[in-house]
Image 1 (cartoon, rainbow, N blue to C red):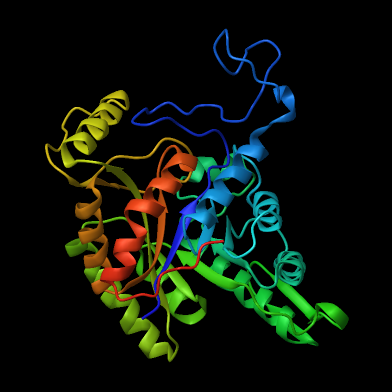
Image 2 (tube, helix red, strand yellow; image 1 turned 45 degrees about the horizontal axis):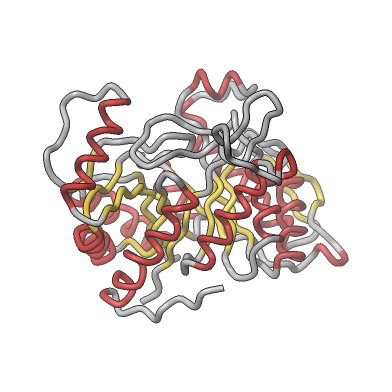
Length: 353
């Protein structure tokens, strides 16, 4: 069995432990010293946010993660640019860039992907995730109706894959059209990026069964998630192709369960939540910043490992994990969770960078 672990990289700001506020990390200002008075920072404005992202990417690689997830954040740094930057500054991890099918031409996206693959030794992957909020989509120039998103995603992936692998390719759909397309020369015959698709609806699952390599589910209690996993398996079996199941979930891990619950409660109160759980487990708590998972797994390392093991037993083979602060927690999860979890799942220890 192969199970992979991705670490989410923030695209704007970062946080502090158990603090709901998003903090600037790496940004420097002449007017507002980054550190308090009395602390000398000789780096000054030579150190910026991309240097912070570099540290996160290296931390995740050193901690043994298999990949980095760069979320699609309309108000943050561009995911493809961040992915390219992280790819150049890491050696082993796969870099998964999230974006939506309103990005533009599927052919141009495919061309960008091929170039990424050529310089990264095929370490680039796609996660296509269209914002669920119609107002957010419209604010970014995308006026598509909710019901049309699965079809546009299907057409986008279909066109992108075929122009990478074929020449003389023609397609005419509702959203994309190609006539006698397909790459030639050095751009032809390149590896198609691994495709991650998202969504919980029947239409989303149907598109994944036909075209995805991995389908990403939002964090739900296992009993609620299982019917979705079973439905994906049914549809992929009907389509005659395997589709891996991924889980996007955030973690809040501390030395003890009591400490984890205390910190989770503090963060939840800052976010205005009043009806709080009183024990470790899956909390409806969103990690500060863009791309937060739907829920956060709260507990000590043993509790978190046990729950993730249960998800793996149910069919999850890709975990997209996140926590705040992303830099420091990459090391914590890499040291306290991943080694034991891999051993419990019977996996070979991931070689560090």
